[in-house]
Amino acid sequence: MALKRDFYKGLEDILGPEFVSDDPVITETYANPVRAGLPTGARFEAITLPKNTEEVQAIVRLCNKHKVQYKASSTGWLYSDPAGPNCIKIDLRRMNHIIEINEKSMYAVVEPYVIGAQLQAECMKRGLNCNLTGAGSNCSALPLAAHVNLGHLSQSGSYGERNQLALEWVTGDGEIVRLGSLGSIDEWFCGDGPGPSLRGIIRGNTMPLGGLGVYTKAAQKLYHWPGPATFPMEGVSPKYKPAYIPPGFLVRYFSFKTLDLMIDAVLKIGEAEIATELMCFNAAMMASNLATQNMEEEIEIYNKFKDSVLGPGFMVLIAADSARDFEYKKRVLQLIVDETGGKALEEVEDPENQGGYVWRYFRETGSIKETGRVLAPQAGMVGGGDSFPLMSYFIKSCSKVKAKLIADGSLFDDGTSPFIQSIEHGHTGHGEVLARISIRVKDPRQVQRVINNASNEIAIKEFFGVPQHVWSDTLHDMYGPNASNYHLWLRKIKKTFDPNNASEASTYITAKE
Image (tube, rainbow, N blue to C red):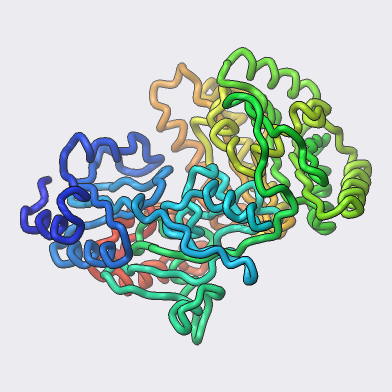
């Protein structure tokens, strides 16, 4: 439906004519053709590009006045399109400034369109590092912009819920709220107080995915970086590699005969706190990080890796502060691997390969290759658990569904184990069941629905908690009655801070009675 001209004129008055458009050539470029389990086909009525918080607030208030919905996003990797008509896009790409890197208090303040690679590069120059979302360093560095905001560095660098400090938030109805120390003394070092904290309102383990207003600035924790200020690079993309492996750095891959043995090794490494990164990649994901986009090359590497592993495994990356620290961490790692019967994948230890692994895992440049490989996951589910073992067993149970779909020909048998991730040295976990839908399947979405429905049933019946893929009214209404009726409280939050339902919430929860 076309926007009323007085509303569109109001947008032009706020932004200037050059930063708003309802041209179908422009709006169509923002359309996402696939929304897993959500309505499809809707398009934004107009695109807006504000440059600061004040312009965002003005747009939000205008939408509330005219009963038009809006949806904000930054880099917009997924789930940032509308579910229905009468909705405009707030594209935050002009808000792309690193506001502050505080070396003494170890935090950084960014606007939404600062990407992870940009912030990390500036931090490394100062002996610091930041957590990056696992979707890749091309995604927003704002700790609220990336759903869970976990990634390769989350073993030692935690994730969004823990890293978020003070915040500037334009609520659904257009109020500006400054959380924590920002609201009391105009500093960014703390996300809580004075008095009751609102951090649990604006996000929990996951965040509202554009359904509760707009986050315009946020601070996040930074961590010590023992490596060089820059990585000298050689080669040509995607075959680039560092010119050297920094002193005190190593990457290893170990596989195990059983899932329980792997879990035991992960927990022991976590207790010792020797790993900077620990990701339970499968053989295909490790192979994808060495291959170019040549299909034959990737399959050749994968088959070689597949024949060399015992079963489920993990990549572990160590970054030490000194030679003594490095030797200690290597000895502890080897002791744990020996106790649990782990087997090393020798190709990973080759210096020619190891340098590339170090670069890709620290800079998170390999995420697209890990998930968009030749054996590409076109169907899957995502979960999060209170501990690494709980997450692992949930994914193991869900993998039985994958096996059945492989048996009936719906999925391609890629021969890989699920992907599981250790967070905060095993205190929490993340996992994904990844699979490629068979070319013989006429309705790929039906296969996706089978996987999603089965995983939800497993999570509820076997008491695995609320996974990280739970968004939308349908899923919250399914899980809420089994988890202290949390969905009723979510709706109260939505109604309180967005009484006119202006912030499009198909990927969050609506305020329906």
